[in-house]
Length: 500
Image 1 (spheres, rainbow, N blue to C red):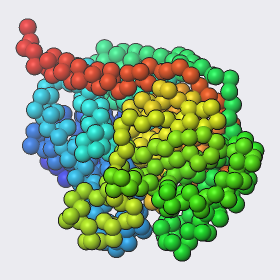
Image 2 (cartoon, rainbow, N blue to C red):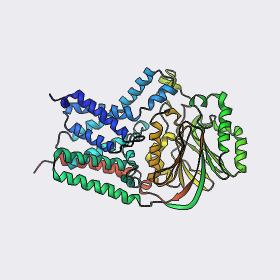
Image 3 (cartoon, helix red, strand yellow):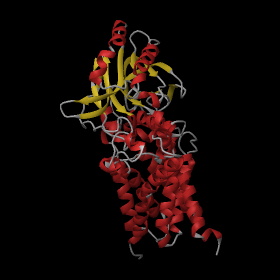
């Protein structure tokens, strides 16, 4: 038996193909690997026995998530105080459970598409299945929308499609192109090569044309922001002994802002509930008011009437607004099955891990005559959530505490996803984090300026207010998801139709 026919060898190949997707994203950005990985999985499944497909799917998923969300280990070990062995086990378990999503995808493939001959309709069906798998990850069990192939194409000509169809449009195009080229190479038919070349020219050429299209317009209004990156160690943040020094550090850094600036403090920058912190912030606010400055900060909020707690962002000076985070991070902000898990290990008892989700219909922030669409940390990875908020906003604001990720790929992936939100909405995006990377992103999804990681810093810059909507802001991901479903059903119908 040939070594490539060995199930063990094919399982290892599947896992490595899953790892390749991570290499197509930040910080490496070897973008061809995303399409190559998806197309290679298609070929691997096609050549496999029906009994092997689900095992290969799970191995692919394990490599995919094992590399793509490896930063989970840092959160569990460094901040959850779990031992190396326990943190490794929990990370592996988490990735293994997420890999089941690829097993489900493999089951659908085996049930409806295998072992029919490869052709263009088959490539369309697999592409639809791939995109539906990504979409399911935005809502299944509250969602974990990380490691989408489309993010790797933000700095390519395909990026022009993002304001039209969002990140899923880029995933659809990349996966389909990869499959068409795989079809041409494996079937060695001129017609397939022509189809692959024609589709590539259309996708890249169309993307380049769309990239020059201005879907939104300038309001001829410039705002100056000063993003404060305090670099507060996570081990000190919730220790009351350091509360005064944390506020002093925020205040001293804010003194670098210019008169009239909108000062941004990151997620949970003030480690005390809103109603208790107001008195403590009076000296800083008085100084800011004298200089006509505004202050927006992340802060926990306690609703004493409902006995609920929120991860929030508030306007303290220069405007008004209070926003409660809608998409909470499991274990970090709430604990599933908490009656069972609380107390087992420190990771299940992290500070501020008992938050409630905010209402879906909340008003934007209003600061210095600017309407701002806020998102907190994890929320910026939800394309449709950000697009809805952007419809009535002049620019986007996201604050985060990426300290949880340590010196891993997590913060770099997180920033890349924030860049995609700016591109999808053609809005400036301001990103403030506790220890980096803080950044200003323009409407093309390009970083205008950024801070180094793990250093106290103040990033000051100008942003332009925008009006108007991109097609994606109006329709969200729905058209691409419908297209993916049609592609899957069309491919299934074409494959099942009897020959005449």
